[in-house]
Length: 304
Image 1 (cartoon, rainbow, N blue to C red):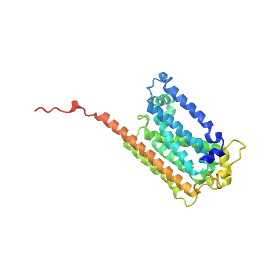
Image 2: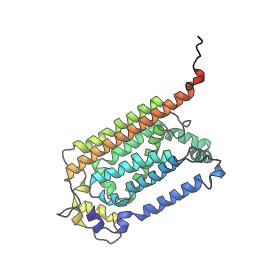
Image 3: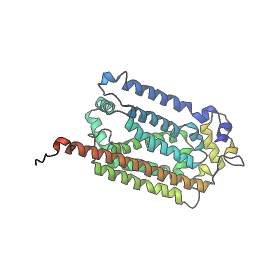
């Protein structure tokens, strides 16, 4: 990492244009759950939920900015780490960190017959399942990947689309509002397994390809055009970071690509595994509420 800090400017490394709006969102969140909570008649947000939201902001900053943004333009394994942080860590943490009364307030604010019809289609578990995994897989088709990386506007819009589709997908796993488009607990577990299956082909493509797939990471001219978007206007692209004895790239391209695919698959499996545990915990809690817990008063007294 030292070569990155020696080569690139503060703005290129720390992306303040992302940090500032995320910091503002954090301030707005704490205002809504504290000073302005009385206007919405919302319940007090526990410390754990606040921690989730702040962690989500940090994960999204690491995924879309920070020095990882520069590193992800040099090695695809870092780029994949960014995707894990943005879509498999930040998104579920946001859903866990936003209180249910805030979701209800927003839904009631925008509820109309037209929006209900749209929501019934968009919030369909099947639509969410195929939308995110389809966009994720399409993103890693070599032609699409190289095209997006060379067009910062298209790339930004695609990232926003991935983020929203990830939010829809995780909504049905986490169920922050159980009464809104509900899946049973058993179906939620099946839904998580289905997501794990659908993302596998994209990971397999990256892991088992016999040669490097993406020109962004093997062609110096394409890499330079991509890297230019990360730098201030007119700044010289440091080709020594891409190739040469002092290069940041400590793995050859094919091995870097394989590491990226393996990392994505393992990270995705871990996150989905944690989510299955979360669903089981909710399931057991419901069963206890329905059946009631055995107490001393419930035990029959046997008289001698």
